[in-house]
Image (tube, rainbow, N blue to C red; front, side):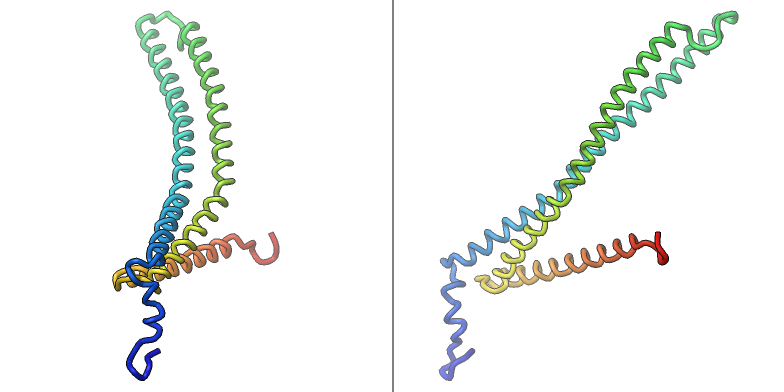
Length: 195
């Protein structure tokens, strides 16, 4: 709004809020930083959960491969022993077989323990998903408040442009998430005519 004398009255009203010593740009910067921190934190916490699950699953698979390898080694040793002694028993000797059965039983107990740990970790990760989603939501809200503050009260043009870019990016992310959820729900819809 410009007066007859050429003064910008709105600019005069907002000038105390946009000066270098005003607390508003600092508040916007603080909100922007907190929002960014929350988004990064709640984005990577599910990744940490997933890596823990992968580590447990890999330990189970590694143990299974080790048991298979030990079974093959026992069979190879039995074949070597049989070639040395033509009249000897076919297959591994009794001592090697009992040792192998004991090792296999120990591994089965350990595998059950690891599978229980995996199941508990998986259930915990699923339960925390809601918490991570809400944390990301609040992070986006706080980041949006900081970006709008930059857009409205940024002391420099570069901060205003930066705030506009962040708001635009958030709108794109929101529409992408809505589109992805819409397609997911459409894919989960039961066929026409019941289940």
